[in-house]
Image (cartoon, rainbow, N blue to C red; front, side):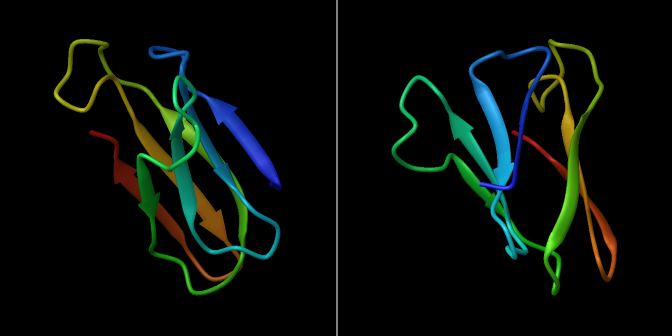
Length: 79
């Protein structure tokens, strides 16, 4: 794992990506064996990820993920 980031609203949700990986993985740390989601959209390795804001009672659970790689920037709603 190259980088990890916990959400502010749901402290059990973790976003991470691996070294030389182009996917962001969302893990529920209450049962971390399998990713809750794999977010794809980059063709080159990721460089950084960040949770975005939103009200905690929003449909997406209070946020979204932004990721950037060597080729592009992508954002995904987290449901």
